Length: 368
Image (tube, rainbow, N blue to C red; front, side, top):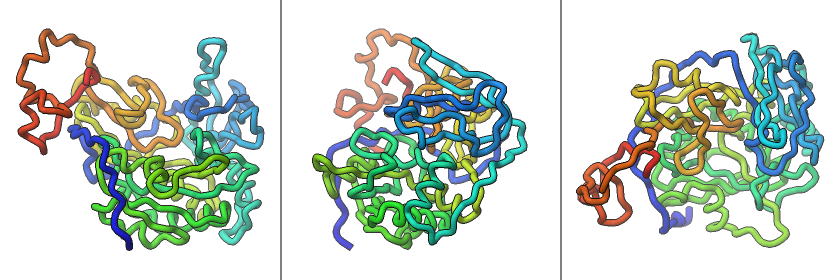
């Protein structure tokens, strides 16, 4: 294997609250919300109005620009409410679960299916939105083939999940997912690995071309890896897929059942316990926070502290989220704070004396 590709510019923010290598089970609650705002460039059209009974895999809304791209319910139950914002923009479709997880009956083809059959399956089951197209980071065009496919196996953002642990029991699903994406795209997948991690789980995957990366964040971002390996040119289309979504697609074809459940990392300095938990898309943050907060004045984020979305204590997880972060709210003013020596403040330069403790981790609030 060639030498690792080095990312020299960037920054690792040393936050407290990394996820412990443990899996815990939590009640998933009864309220779920699908948010069209999780996807760029779509105009949603609701097909499941309030009062409609749904199952796992029932289409709830579709994209007016591309009616074949459907977004399906992660649970069985009833659509309760449509939440709209300014100019009646659709923000959330609230579904109340009945706890039964009854599933739509869908004919899932075998692993040997051709590209057209795979595409139709991903579209009718609601899995197609997992495939993102570059440039612009929009849902992949169903009528276009990609020039390249990129997948990263690690995330370098603050408190990001360890995918080797998160997917440690999903090797067969990962292999099946890689086979499906290869058959769908007709391309070898460029697989980005962390040069300083144990990558045995990923090195054995089929139809991949491996590239190792090292350096600070954003070394784990798929866009950074694309730029280092094969920068996108005018007129080209690239596909990117989260490594956990690869496993979900593989599970769909292995089990022949629609199942959107995924594992996320619960992290942050304001949680009494950090861990990896199983959730469903649109799950309420309240179910994750029950008896878990060390204090009440917090910022709840679906995603990481740099690019995630603040959702509040009663908000809903984003559709394809892998990280849930809770940090202190910075709603205060620190008078002459710059005069203090700053032993408990992180700085890029030598502004504070904390530069003398390079391995220290910090409890940073939103004022940072």
